Length: 116
Image (cartoon, rainbow, N blue to C red; front, top):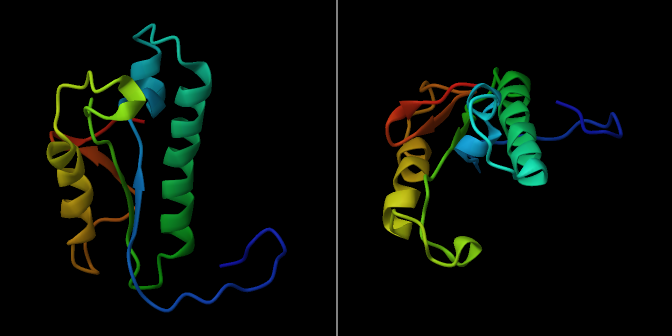
């Protein structure tokens, strides 16, 4: 694996988890008028980062997956979300506990895999 400087990066062991939302789904964005261009674009970039990191780390014991926490009540949305923070964290925790031979390069929520 190499960074932007083309210098090798040492990877010892571990797992990588990234958080995204449904707003990063290209499939779902074309079906909704969420009106959050910058936020949605950043989450779509996170989806690509998940896939690219998983590919770069395919020969290591590191799994790279992203989790969509759902509409979680946080200060970001004025605590208007329908899910508690514990519910929002559940998928990230599940992904963090996957074995080294588990899936990698995926994006999922509590209901399962999400479309790109």
